Image (cartoon, rainbow, N blue to C red; front, side):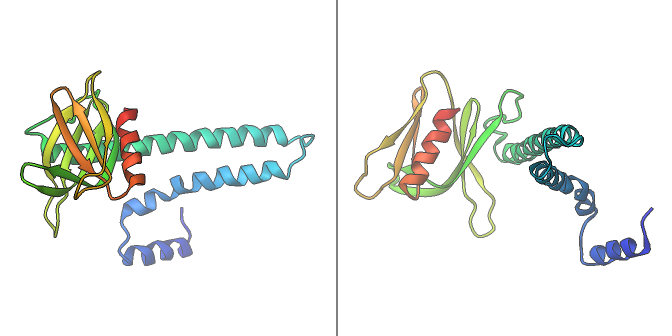
Amino acid sequence: MTSDSENSSIKRKNKAGDRVESFLITPIQRLPRYEMLLSQSLKYTNKGNPDFELLTKAHKLAKEVNKKNNDSMGKYISSKRKIGLNEICSKYINLMLSHRLLIAEIKDLFILDFEKKERKSCFVSVFTDCLVIFLTGKHGNKDEYYTHLLFNELSYAISVDKMKYYDHIFKVICMDTSVTLMAPDDQSKDKALKQITDC
């Protein structure tokens, strides 16, 4: 049961437009605080204290629970994002295959089309076995599928030297297909290359 002051607090928050989900997440948000509290308690508890062993076990358990929660939340967010991306590109590639995990998303890139002499704003979704490029929606427009590359043992990503009008360029090559991408700076390019080659 809740007290009158808790009920009035809930009503005030609910009037402010909070959704039920925000109340349901509160106990989960407390778990990291318990881990910190136990960690601090261990710092100030003598090893000879009879509570030291129990505090150590409780701290270890709190750490494990928090890690599990974080891993589960990461998987949930990743699968939700994967569903959203699949809605955009399902005509071209099925992202919902069980072995196809979303590893990383690389934002603020440009896809270079040398034939048309243009660059388009894009982001790249890196999966365990493929790379999918989406054109970034502007001014309220939705993101669009551009292309995808399926990885194999011969796939690689490589830095490209500065060109006349372009800098911070790299290329992803898979079998007989390749794409040339441009990052905003060298640090972003190096990070993108690492995320792609690590999968």
